[in-house]
Amino acid sequence: RLRRSYDTLAAAARQSQAPIVRWLRQQGVAFRAFTVVNAISAELTSTQLRALAARADVRYLADDPVVRNKLPGSDGSRDAAPKDACNNLPGVPWGIERVNADDVWALGARGQGIVVAGQDTGYDFDHPSLIAQYRGNGAPPDHNYNWHDAIHAFINGGNACGLNVVSPCDDSNHGTHTMGTMVGENDATGFTVGVAPDAQWIGCRNMEEGDGTPSTYLECFDWFLAPTDLSGSNPDPSKAPHVINNSWGCPTSEGCTSANWSQMNTAVNNLTAAGVLVVASAGNAMGATCSSIAAPAAMYANSLTVAWTSNTPGNSLHTSSMRGPVTADGSNRMKPDISAPGSGVCSTVPGTGFGTLSGTSMAGPHVAGVAALLMSAFPTLKNDPPAVRDVMLQSALPLPQAGSCGGFAGSDRPNPFTGWGLVDALAAYQRVQAAMYLFGDGFE
Image 1 (tube, rainbow, N blue to C red):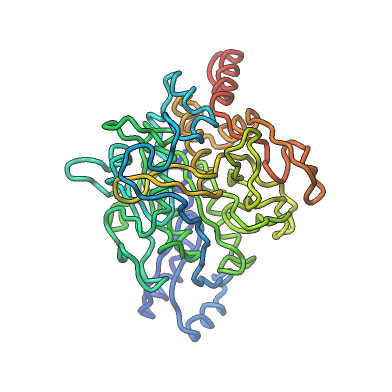
Image 2 (cartoon, rainbow, N blue to C red):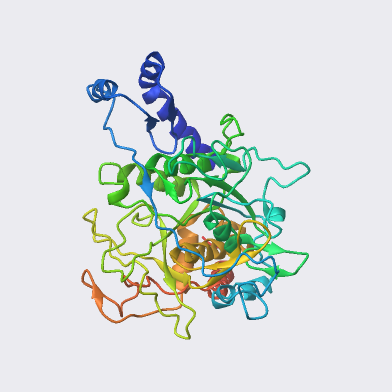
């Protein structure tokens, strides 16, 4: 399915882009051609822009300005201690218990056979709790097809990793933290912070210290469809991940507008059609209001959009978790889809230690990890995003809310605050198991 999708998209892109590519080369313009969406990124003069705008084979031109994200700050330390550095309770972090991931581990599913991916500020691949799960782990490590850097020019004026880095590097701590929540485990200490600790991971850096552009996000989506070697050559869709976590947002005021929303939406749709599940954090805003989910990638129908719940007995929705429905594009589309733990989440930070972060950025990886557990337990779910999505939504713990948004009541299920409810790995596992029992030959 992945090969067929990639080949179809690549053939269409090559044919339609060929005349423009020739023109760009004649002009001496550096460019990057995409496959997951039929688009080309380039830095052009005003004269060149006017020339392109006049061409019949150019559908539209869109700005690619710097995007400035408000990433959550750490409320914990980068302590090298294996456990209580960020979690005063014994055992696994509270989020893993809350989504019942450890109950699914007891049934034999820990993410084995599944590849998760993330696009973020980068990743500290040799962190003791991440190195064994890195798909490129070896002696020496092989970063071909396992890592891509979409930061080719300084956006923020500089970063600790540099540009076009050829091995995973995190210029912040955000990406390393999100990856730890998906797969983090240290066999030497026995401390597990990841929902699917036996899954493998690959990564792409789409932000410089939290700042990206529409094209850096799009470049990572493009790479995930068919990962390449470190030179950017020899794309191979067989090495695509099963699920991608996206703990970032690109708001209208900072680069992603109605003029370019369709580009990333097409990328998400094409990845979904190819069999890759796209998980996106709903976004954070102090005192979030109705229809505040208004940015890629959370706003799209095929993104599995995740709200943020707190560590309270009732799994209360955090006041900063953005709400639906999506109205910015005129759709009145129900969002978010599901909820997950996001407050004081303990996970990996660059170096050797752990720290806590809060936000929808921390909630999204919990859902991506649960998806990995389900696909690991039931391989027929691999490369079937609609089925994985459906089973997680239908089995979620309902979280009704007071009030309403956009004509949708908080008491509804789904609702524009918590979606279908809190993701529940065990309930989802049991739902698939029941379907397999009823239908005999696998979950369809």
